[in-house]
Amino acid sequence: MHPFISGNKYRKLKYNLNEAKKNNFDSIVTYGGAYSNHIAATAYAGKENNIKTVGVIRGEELADKWQENPTLSFANANGMHFKFVSREWYRTKDKTTALQVLEAEFGQFYNLPEGGTNQLAVKGCQEILSDKDESFDVICTAVGTGGTIAGIINSTKENQKVIGFPALKGDFLQKDIRKFTDKSNWSLNSDYNFGGYAKVSEELIDFINDFKLVLNIPLDPIYTGKMMYGILDLIQKDYFKPGTKILAIHTGGLQGIAGMNTKLKKKNSPLLLL
Ligand SMILES: Cc1ncc(COP(=O)(O)O)c(C=O)c1O
Image 1 (cartoon, rainbow, N blue to C red):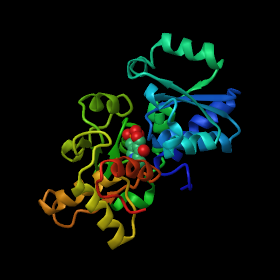
Image 2: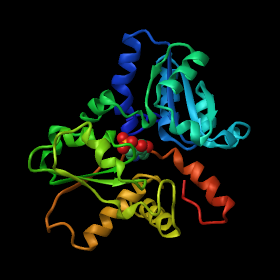
Image 3: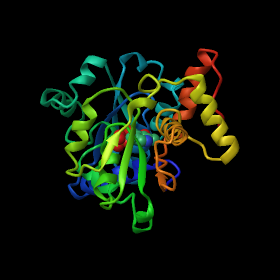
């Protein structure tokens, strides 16, 4: 969709940027971890739209070594200013007191939640499916904060089912998704999170590398790689009726490969192909 505002990020940012501009905000504050696709995409979108961006980043320890991190270096090169916070502080980021601290430091800003997920992001994600996709029986997507799948669910037809593959552990997701959709034609399959957010195994790395070599389709190790591994495993286990038409949505996230490789290199593990 866009070289840097990739996959679902373009959809999630579209109406939020419109809203920020309509209300004359000159800056956006948003939140994420050190390898966040959302942080990278928001920095670039801010630059393109002439809006200043601030990233509240989980992990104080990054303050003096963010230059080694490909995601944060990219975001900074595209104009994002950082505020590094402790994990404890990060957990309180949606509280009024945290917002007051940020306002005292940065003035008035458009507040964009972690992962960019809010009602306007869901509205954007409702545009992922189009009439051309009506012939699919099952639609699959990776899940982080739940905004993308909620938008997809909202625009499905009655006969369609949505399966989400969460990239992280936790039961809170069902509730988060229900905030944005009344439909019930969806389920989450948590069997393919590989131990949790940003956790990978050599088997997953091999799978992603083979997928690229055979099909020339790159997958990221945190979201789309796990989803695709899950779909193929379920097919092999005859989970789907023969003839089922499955649509797997590639939500982007390829910028995360470089960061994952930095971590894998330190552990002397096999790397992802670029
Ligand atoms: C590449 C990629 N795919 C999927 C997701 C999941 O999106 P959501 O947070 O809306 O569930 C994200 C972000 O969280 C992502 O970066």
